[in-house]
Length: 516
Length: 74
Image 1 (cartoon, chains in turn red, yellow):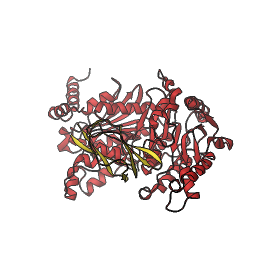
Image 2 (cartoon, one colour):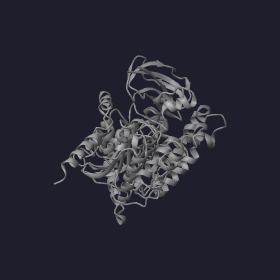
Image 3 (cartoon, helix red, strand yellow):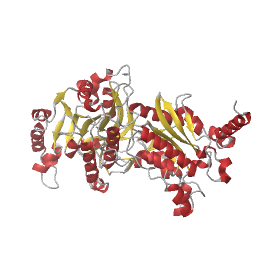
Image 4 (cartoon, helix red, strand yellow):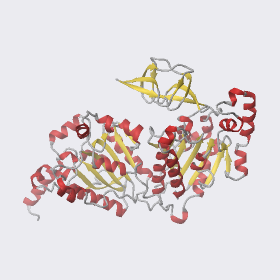
């Protein structure tokens, strides 16, 4: 029989640990409608599947032992929708989930296990930064913060997902930026350091939302993929993301049942694209119409909007979409769109998810602002990444396809197979501009100077841009009607499955920067 | 209540105003259409709310980043 005194002590210590930072702080969170760390763990992992690592861990400083249950960061192993995963969940009620000696050891244990054993790693973040006084001084820095040479090392062995769920400074910001998928609860702040510290340092009052609120990350930085209103929605988004992912980089993604109604909208997809070449439309609707029902999961919807990046399923299999969206800037890709596409291709390639490109753009955005945004460098990063991708790549040319962007979107031999809708038009330059370059005078628009001649030359030059010449030189392998798009994708994804390596690619992009 | 400024994302000319001041507007609604790069480019609200101000008229030129409308959010 185990000594009763020891068992009682075990229970007391366990209860103390589970009580986190105390009832007062927990109540404040409840009143604010925000989950605490243990509620988040319960919501993340399948019921009864969580095994905590370090329940009895505390601060390494003797004077803090009794006030630091779990040392502010809760870790462990559990299952998400039946699949094994590793979690790090910050407990803000304990010392603001600040980083210190013991919790750093806990996190590196989780990171090592996830990376070496090939398990998804989830961070539910909220942290005040490095703990003071623990990390102060040369002794603190030398012993604590700089002591793990693998902490920020990512070779994408397994998928990482992160949520920014409150005040995120220091570690929770870093891990969100390192993750393959990130989600933020509106109202949270993600920044290098707090508005209080920033205000002190620069002598100007800075407001948290302006420093690192959701709008900042949705529209300006693009560092976060999705934005939601509640903790539950954030954790749901992470689970949905993981449903597209393999458990690690050396297996193919899971295959799901094909949702009822999939393919119903495919027959009328052509109606979503206007006949007039000067009218725009929303490419997201076109993608939704050809993929499995309710499988559309868009990343960074408010950032670099001239391009769309979305995880989807076709026939139950994960497929990544990269598409131009004519609704914004006619679909002309800018520097932000390039960054967004590159990071998406890197993720899909790292986790063996085939890529499909839907093309309708008049070329890359040009002009002084584009150059300032380093467009030439971005366009070449895009090309380099595209040519290093080893998952299957398929391109569907829908309408306009001009200039260098033709190559970036998989034209030529940059996709494994290419098809074109009958509406596709391809050249080095939009015919309206080409007519002016060849026949116009500097500073004059031929359409204004001599409309009849412009019309004749426009028609002549447009003839050479048709899909039939593309098919004649075998630059596209099929010309299809819009309603055949889903079937073409299903068939070609099947053809290009990587059978020789069980669906696994070479991962040549696995050390591409996790941010930009 | 917050005033959200809606900017033009391109340089072009106002072709058609699609909404009147006072109208309810939803995220994704087209407020006006510009002509740029020989395309009809919509200016789309990024907010739910009420259109409280139009800062341009039809046929006026607009620059990239210029505020063309204001939406008041709840």
